Image 1: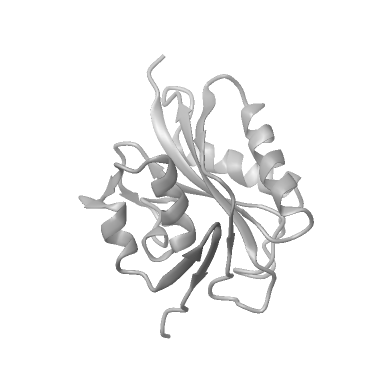
Image 2: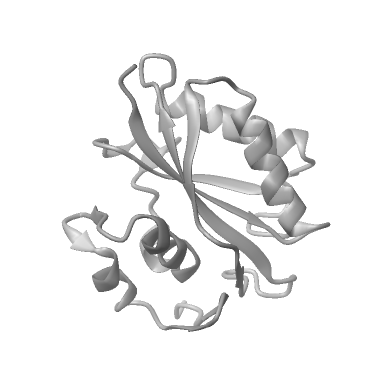
Amino acid sequence: MQTVKVYASLGSNQGAPEENLNEALARLETYGEDITLTRMSEYYETEPQDKTDQPWFLNQVVELEVDPEIWSPEGLLSAFQAIEAQMGRQRTEPKGPRPIDIDMLLWEGLEQQTGYLDLPHPGMLQRAFVLVPLKEIAPDLKIGGKKLDQLLAKIDYKIEGKKIWQSQPEQ
């Protein structure tokens, strides 16, 4: 079976965030042996971005190996959204609190701008809570020809242990 690497970011700030992240990954693994969880970062407690009047998030990044003959990027995104819905995610408040958020960051060898699924994920380069755990599991990864350290150097953030603060971009 030929596989591609897919990187995804998970976040939660409602209920029991650690349990939510674990449940989302367990649900994803039940989709079949054509999706394999190969690496996962540690959990990072992260300051909310954009909408700051909400609880901090627990975030992590995972690496999956996916059979591209069975899964398209859009199909896998639909699976992510189905898991979010099963776990109670409601999309009534953009950037608001949520029990689970699963974002596809990268699909190996693919760049696309469709409006439904843009890859690489358009917001990831401005988010320390994505790049720090991504660097943990894929330290040699390059995005747009740049190393993760180079991308992180462009962000105003602070990390202490597994806690990440990030300045809000100017509007």
